[in-house]
Image (cartoon, rainbow, N blue to C red; front, side, top):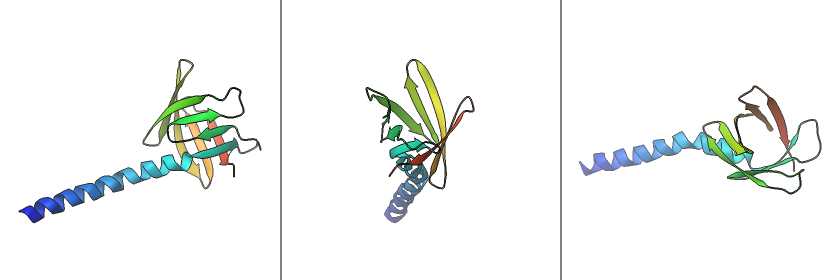
Length: 107
C-alpha cells in the first residue's frame, strides 16, 4: 500500500512538472532585449515580471502577468492581452485587436 501511494505521489509530481514546462519555457524565452524586425534599435526589455520600453525616458517598469501563451499588460488604464508565439528566434505578439508585432532578439 505504501508503494502504491509513493508511486502515485511521484507520478503526480512528474506529470505536474511536464505540464508546466512548456509555459515556463515559453515565458523564459521572452527574457532579454528585443527590437522590431525592421528596426535596429532596442525598444523592449522583458524580465520575469516586468517589461520596459527602453527607448522612452524615463524608463518605467510595466508589470505583466503570464498565463498559458498570453501576456496581460495593465497600464494607463488599458488592459492589453498579447498572444505570444515564436517563429524561430522571432517573437510574435498578437493583441486582442489583431495587431501583430514581430520582434527579434538583440544580442
